[in-house]
Image 1 (spheres, rainbow, N blue to C red):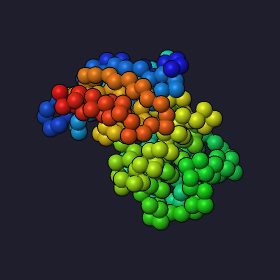
Image 2: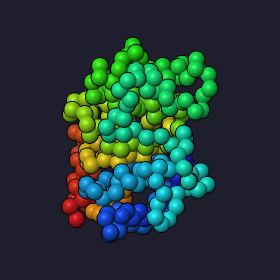
Image 3: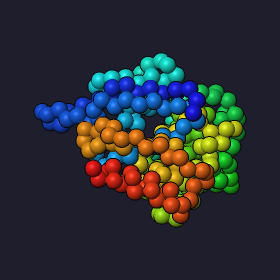
Image 4: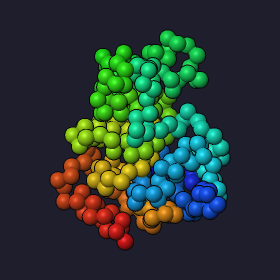
Length: 252
């Protein structure tokens, strides 16, 4: 792996619930390196999605800090983008317009924005659907728009918050295989990817490294390096061994 792009150091997040304070994340520390696909897995409510929002610059940690390219991350940046589990598309905008929206502040030329958005849609297999509204697209196609929107600004880091969880099994499998190839393409891919998931099999399929979280407050209890050739097949005995190891850690 390459140089460190992102450093999370001693991050804790506390939230107010009525008159009480609740700790969501507790003393989380890790690095994300160039060329790496890192996944975080853990039980529901352990703060996985909260951590992604800290890394995206959307919320500030109660303790600790995040460094991006060696500098404190204090606010959102177009160099760190996110794919959401609920698609997060504007229903009144076309697929092309939803993707263009990611460039509205960084690319002043409307013609250039449109050209970049068209190319992003082509890369995710949606050429010909530029003028479709979200209601006219299947779940898998909506999520492809989400990936196009996240990739169009050429980010250094791609964040994914359970990006396949709202898809049917077949659509999820097809999109996972495409993402596995897409995020490793040096000509278009982000420099690194960070995914949150509750699906052990997809984590083994996609990841170079997995961080296993405890229940709330979420903390790292284990790290598993996934040493399998790509593209990965669930039929391989070693694939099943990694799956079993992660299930064992989650059940601890």
